[in-house]
Length: 160
Image (cartoon, rainbow, N blue to C red; front, side):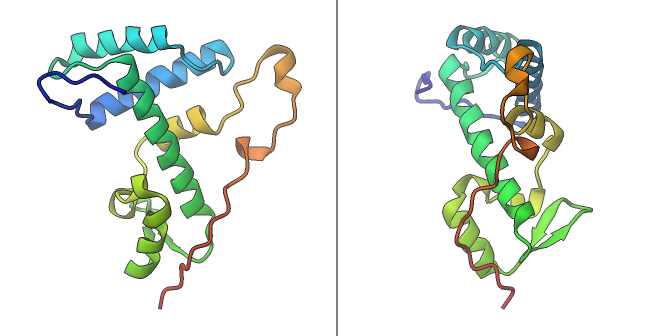
């Protein structure tokens, strides 16, 4: 759980999110996919606090954000994999009926913004959550194309 100061919550913006994604990507690439420890996240939180100021971030703040980003990426993959939806590559957004969208966000609550904004920094998301970072003997393990399968969900994506 992230700590709060005077009842204030840490607020993420595009710059903070991109910096965090870049740090995660660099760390995973340099460690062969090893996840950052609490002490690494605490160090990054201190760097964020020095750079951005405002309500302080803590290791838990970054850990929780990483888990939310993982859920968003899984939702984006599910959207892209569903052939019953339209896709606008110019805006990287989904085209579907309001009912179909409500069915989707019922399962992927963190993904509501993807209908109108698309997924910013998708290359970094891919590198972090979908890329095989294994090195050495681990590099020859059993891995499916794309780092895993897309979860199956029961949606009604009809455009009616």
